Amino acid sequence: MIKILDHLEEWIITLLMGGATLIIFLSVVHRYGTGMPIPYVQDYLLSLHFEWAQELAIIMFVWMAKFGAAYGVRKGVHVGVDVLVNRLPPEWRRFTVMLALVCGMLFTGIIGTLGLTFVWENGMHHAVYTLLGRDASEVPEGPTTPDLEWPTWLVYSAVPWASYLMCFRFMQVSWTFLRHGELPHHDESQVEGLSDDDHDELFAAAPAHGGAR
Image (cartoon, rainbow, N blue to C red; front, side):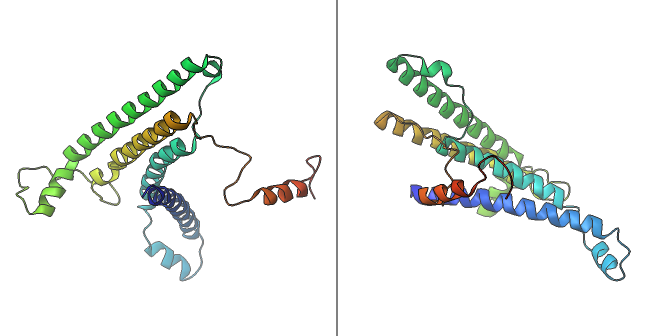
């Protein structure tokens, strides 16, 4: 189950980042293409409407950043200043690390709960009542986004979803630290998908003095 969640998290981040990049690229091509007086092509491009592209790209990048934060906790890629912690005695070091992890759990849990409350009051309850067939006439429907006209509660739901996932990742790291005394550490010299032999060949092919081949 954890592996499925890990892969789902990675796929969400990858698809959001790739999709947002593609949308921005197409939007830029469309903008410059409409300014070129090419018969038929210019008319066709002018008939296309890309006003929604910027808004959708922003939404996708926000979702990607939120889920990327949870991924960062799992992989240990978040920036941290541990000079003082490393100089502490082992007992104090362990206590300090656990205190930081507990604070991370509490903070992300609180943000997730506050975000869920905001999303619920921003129109999610209207959608749920409507889905369940309950009377939603006295419940505000909530605002929508300017260009896409999506319910804003759907956009803002990235906050509770990703915050609770981040809280779970803090719990996961804490449990591993309590059992084995180890924290996830991201090694910048390692690239996922490449074996040690591939790394050796890659560095062997690199210029010795930074020159170009």
